Amino acid sequence: MKKYLAEMVGTMVLVLMGCGVAVSLGCDPVNNIPAVVGTAFAFGLAVVAMAYTIGGISGCHINPAITLGCYLTGRIDAKDCGMYMLFQCIGAIIGSILLWLLTSNVETLSGTGANDLQQGVSVLGGLIAEIIFTCVFVLVVLGATAKTNGATNNFAGLAIGLSLVLVHLVCIRYTGTSVNPARSIGPALFQGGSALANLWIFIVGPFIGAACAACIWKAIEPQK
Image 1 (cartoon, rainbow, N blue to C red):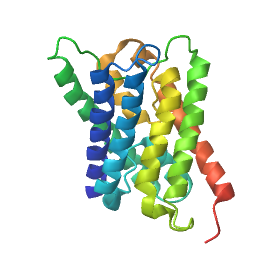
Image 2: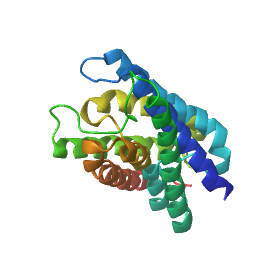
Image 3: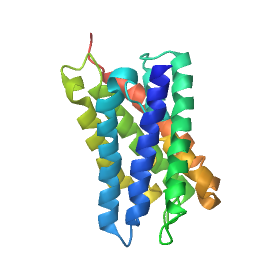
């Protein structure tokens, strides 16, 4: 149970800090580029912080897509896979509640940083973006944490956090960057509207991307 609770807390922090910065800075990929950079680093730094806080307890997935990738590569069993995803979603909802409480009491702020298709981006374009960038991100996670891949796992938290920054810098313009179903589910429940209507994109896309990453890693993983 401790590792499930750790996943809940870690995902709560990720949503509260990452989405919180997006709301506080007014992240707009067209008109506010500095806020985009700030948001990208917020998500990356949150992952780094949590990796060194709960990594030794649960592995710090804090992302159902990562959990799926780990399950498909045989690193966790089906029970842990399901429970991790459940507690990650609970943590994301708690983080969204806290953010909603904050923004609802500030006149100049609104929303919970939910993912949505950005201006001019089609449903297919958003889905493709989520698949591609989740695949890249989960592949980094699988490689950086693999015991068969030299000493890279000593710096896994840093590598994963920096890769998430990079993914956000590219993908925010298309979907606001999810690559994490839990991170999308929590905020969308409170923001509603098109964010909730398009939520399926940010669940299906990351899961497909994670499955692709697992296949790629199985093909290139070094021998034990």
